[in-house]
Image 1: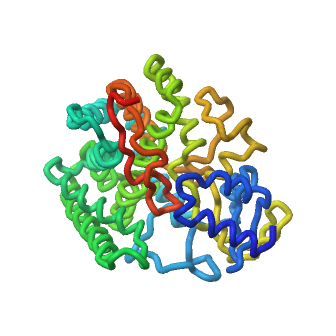
Image 2: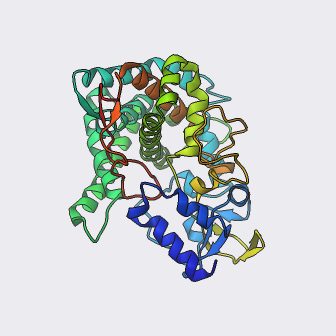
Length: 406
């Protein structure tokens, strides 16, 4: 594939008209595992090469290492640690993980299960009498916000404010300057400022007052790496809220869409609830919430699949393409919850493996199990449903389901 052809293929993938089904285009792109673009960047689309990049210490996640930065970063004094490199990335990640999972907090997700189940049950109760529901607006969208508020220790009376901020933030991510009013972008910028100010005030209340919520733990921790600054804690909380929200919404919504397209598997899940664990892993491979890592930067010249990528070049990783690579997965375009050796790229890999992955998995497991159990003969109103504009965080913007119609 020539550089011009590769650029044309990427444009087709990024174009909104391909959002409902980009997988045939990924298959074409995989014919050239490393495809140089007209702007000098490189697109990597095959499993082996993507996994190698994610584990390559010569690759940077810091935009400052790009020869030609693509855009200005958001207004902040401290970026989230996913946008930093070792050793700073490793230090901040260790400090966050002390309170977010094994080995220091091994029961965090398990201990949250009653709260997760309660939130899910309450949301389903709220639309119990509706003939038609929107899985996104009525369920998948509000669920992770409530979970993250619970995790951070946000008072219940403040949760509605969080929902409004998330609405404005997510809408601004899909901002299209050609078709959307600038107000949409401005509201996102203001929501980000308001959220950071609110979290700062909440954090002030936690200093010297140890508690069980994540903000309290981070504010009062004196572990081997010291203590995070307030700005670092706020950036970590922001990361949980924004990245955790979008991936969970897409995982649940894509999951329900996939089950409705595969009625025998939906019925099997209803009869065999334990199927949910491998089923969610297969969803992360088959219809992942994150399709693309938009960039990595090379610290030095590197060779990938016989292609030399110069120092400072932007590298785009097509995670969803890699997880459908037939050289890694048998019959990759088939949804198979019994699939073994399912080392997908749904949450990335390497040092930047999604640190909220265990929580997102459990949220999806509980959400899908309860939806399948409690919805009577659900059927899709429209297939394909309308999708969000983003090709990176890919998922339906609405998923209308008619009850008793399947």
